[in-house]
Structures are given as structure tokens and as C-alpha cells.
Image 1: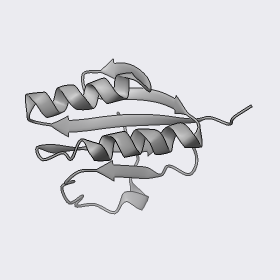
Image 2: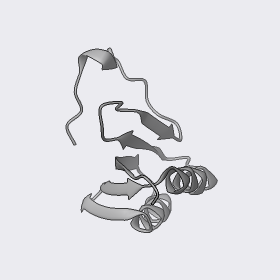
Image 3: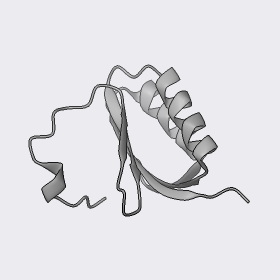
Image 4: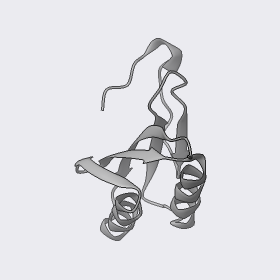
Length: 95
């Protein structure tokens, strides 16, 4: 049985068509908990597939962050992400 990990996907995309494409991809992997936030339970293969599909969108008007929801707390960013002005090791994320 494949092992799964929990993820949170959050995005900030300003262009409507891009935003709709992002939501459509994410809906195929998890469920929406807010307008721009999804919860996902993925195998490693599904996570790789999701990241590949998001990269194919070639975002211009925003970005997507994928957070692994466990003690390793890894984030995968896709698209132009604004600089984070704080030391992430000292902060918690609340979505």
C-alpha cells in the first residue's frame, strides 16, 4: 500500500484564467477548504505529478505554495514568489 503525506496548497494568482486553471488542477488532487487553499493527501508519485502539472501552467500573475503538513514542513513554490522578509525557522504558518 502506498504511503501518503498530507499537504496544504495555497495560491495567490491575480489573473482570472490562470487562477481557474490552478484551481482545476488542485481539484483533481484534493479538496478546497478556502477560495485559494486546498488540502491534499498524496503519495510521492501523486506529489510529483501535481508539481509537474502546476509547472506546466507557466504562471505569470502569481504563485502557488505547497506545504507538506508534518514535522518536516517542506514547502514547494511554483511561479514567481515574492521575497519572504522573515526567518522562516522562527515562524509558524497559519492557513
